Each structure stands twice: as C-alpha cells, then as structure tokens.
Image (cartoon, rainbow, N blue to C red; front, side):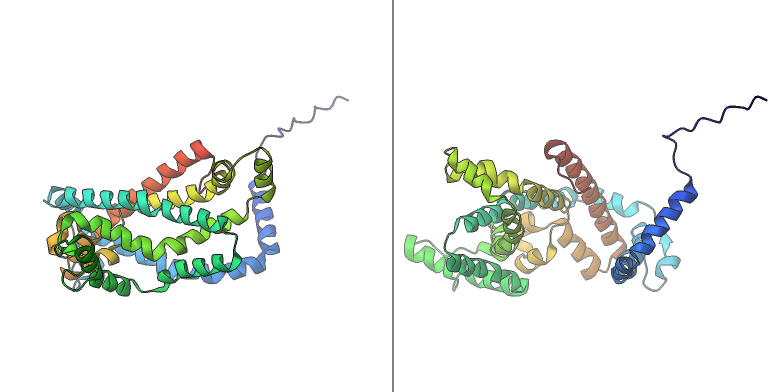
Length: 322
C-alpha cells in the first residue's frame, strides 16, 4: 500500500492568526498590572486629547456658536484659500520661520554649551550652586519675565538705557517699539528663562558616558577640547538629535504667549507670527473657523517636518524617534 507523502511545511509561512491572537492575550494577561497602570493615562488622552479633535471640522465650516458644529454651514477649503490670498500670509510665514531660525541658531545650542561647562566644573559646591541659579528662572511665570523685560528696556527708567547713557552717552532707545530689535529681545528672554532647565537633559546624557573613554583619550594625549569633541559630543549626540527633531516639529507653532506679552502694533512687521495671528482672529475677533483652519495647517506642517527630520536623522546618525 502506497501512502501519499506528507505536505511540505513552509517554515517562513505566517503563524495562524488564532495563534498570534492567543499569544498576544497571554502576554497581555501576564502584564495585566502594568496595563492597568496604563489605564488612567490612556483615559486622559482619549478624553482630553483625542475626543476634542472632533472640533477640527469647524475649520471647514462657517462656524456659529448658536448653530453648533453640526448645524453650521459647510464651506470646504475657503478659510485656507482666504489665508493664502490675504495680504498678511507670507509676512506671517516669514516672521514665524525667521523667529524659529533665530531660536534654533542661538537658543538650541546654548543649553548644550552650558551642560558641557557644568560637566567641566570640579568644585561640587560651586557646580550645585550655579546649576540651581540657572534652573530658577524656569519656575518664574512668563508674565513676570515679560514684565521684567519691559521694565528693563523702558526708554526713560529702564536699566539698559541708563547703562547705555552712562557708559556711551547714548540717547534713550524705545527697544520694544522698534521692529529690528524684537527678534533679539524675544530670543534673549526665552534663553534666559529656559537655558538652565533645558541643560538638564544634556547633563543626564553626560552622566551616562563611560569615564574610561576620557582616561583612554587622555592617555592618547587628547586635551580637554579634543576630549569634548571626540568623546563628549558623540556621547550626547542621540539626545541632541531627538531634541532637534522635536524642535523642528514646532517650527510653525512658535509659542504665542511670550510674543503677545512683549509685542505691540508698532513691531508687527517682525513680531507678528502665525500663532499670534490665530489668537487675534480666533479669540479676540471670534472668527473660530478661520483660526482653526490656520492652526490645523500648522499642525499638519509640523507633523510633516517631524517625519522629514526623523528620516534624515536616521540616515545620518542612526538616531530617530521611531
């Protein structure tokens, strides 16, 4: 009696879906306590982050608070067309990009330099004191920080004008009324407030570098500068790239609160950005649909920038968010 040969089994074939599902449920049951701890955060994000996204549809409507989202008239892409055909669109985009580039050029590398400087301090007491002093401005409200900046830069009573007059005999300058000074003031205020706090992540990354690498570099004759270039910077490069990717994702959504607290109509030429325009049209002018459309455009561009920066970083440095 001749039996048929047994069917060949392809080892590369995908396992049965029932088996995959069973294994997934088994792993989930093993980690049930961890998953239960995840539940509050998951509920928070669903309730306060994802469900409100339903309101995005007003960007495509002529929203009326009396008719609600479902009763308002559908207008499609009209608000996007109005924005790009308006007289302020390209000025707002230019100001937003230029302010972000200023921030990227000066405020982004500053915490890295500060962390490297802290790392070289040998006196433990002096290091703790200087770190604490640099962290403190982060805990001050931006309203207070902006108020201090306005007082320091006041033409008649500000300390900056008094020092310029005593040292150089300069006439009082209305810094906050001149468009050419606004970008420098904005970056300086943000830098003073956040430089110490932002350096914490880099200090944490520095603490993870193996000290034997410094000893080996020292034996090879490398000085402090060479050690910083060859050991320290490669050690914190993944942290730098991750923070840079996140920074690029916010290129068009510059924080409006600082600008609103510092600017005035006389400096709109350089200070008015997309976020402040959305604030004026949406909250002050109650044009909710138009503001939602511009904010939605900001978010989409931000996501595209994150994908592009993540892909570029993965190719160049093998570091990426996902």
